[in-house]
Image 1 (cartoon, one colour):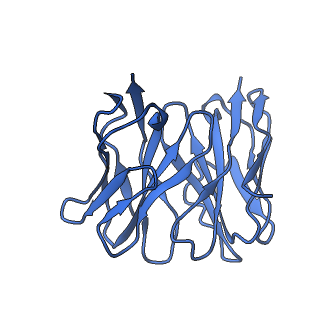
Image 2: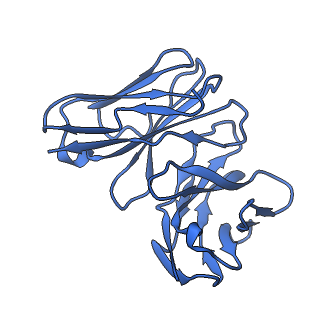
Length: 114
Length: 114
């Protein structure tokens, strides 16, 4: 069975500062990895995903995440955050064995201060 | 509709009552998921339907919880004899069979058990 650990429940940063949201996973099989975002008063939506190929994946709004198999990590980064990035971010994993059930981490609340 | 629709959006009930939560997935999506999000916590997997296969019920917390899905359409999550610890936002999501793990979430049903 898979599991996901998001090491930080809350991350406050100043606007235009860099940010890293940490995610580690545990699995005995190969996995797909995802970051979902929940903006205030909205439903969850996919931010980016790693399925195969390049270990560095990017979103359309400047976030990126790198799959590190040796460290079993999939940390999310952005070099310069904006107020509009304030949201809760969830890391998720599913296995490649056909079951598409996603297991989510506890979430990290990113707060951007002006 | 264009997205996943859940109803009711808010439900307040008394301890011991039964509740039903409804989810209308995106048309054509064969997979349907129910998750629970308690205040300040991550997403807890409840149940997963994929086409006509037997559902994965491994996340249901007790036999008071059950869910049904008619074909590849509407699903109903039923909680019998509600308890205060059942208070949470219940999220439904759907995906295509080979959707690469991208789930489309509804806005949730917030359940408050008094």
